[in-house]
Length: 254
Image 1: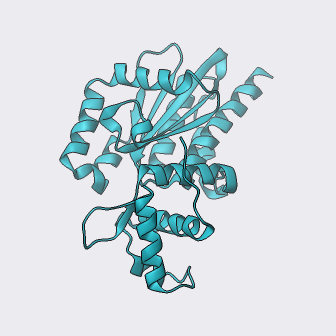
Image 2 (image 1 turned 180 degrees about the horizontal axis):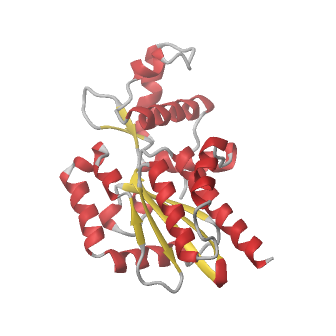
């Protein structure tokens, strides 16, 4: 994907719009950006820059009189920057919640380890998390009620897409994973909007983590949530889940 270069101010402005949209779930106006105090420029300049970002495909205006929301292209740039510039980290308090949940789990049981990770990541992220291990046909799903409670999923077309995804879950889940892993290696991948091969959830974002499990098995966690999800937290959670599963598996081998 070719992403058009932005000026430093446009880049900073786009990040601010995305952060505010993730925080509030609402369209962001130029007035809100001006009042945030992050830019020492006149409001007309902010309006013009946001208009340019819209022309470039990074923002869209849902209603003529309303603010703007980031597009899938904007979120892709944002995630790329998070990974390359900030790095993916997770606070100690959140890591401790995951660690404590594993204290009551038989770490030599690959399925039990995977289910515990899925349950904790689902609880902390507030999104749907699906766990699967190699050699198993069925997957463990946690947090569907999380998605239904998110305002975006109250829209009928979004809800119907999610319902269709679950009606044909096994085949769709297998197809999604084949397409995600067939070309590139890596522990964590992010698909945003139309990058997702499944049309039923192409308005959402999907994060998948892959890792080693005891007894030579492989595990995956798949997080499904709205495109305006908290990528910092969710990428940190999924990366930490992969790291801790790999670490546990290596310690058992040794």
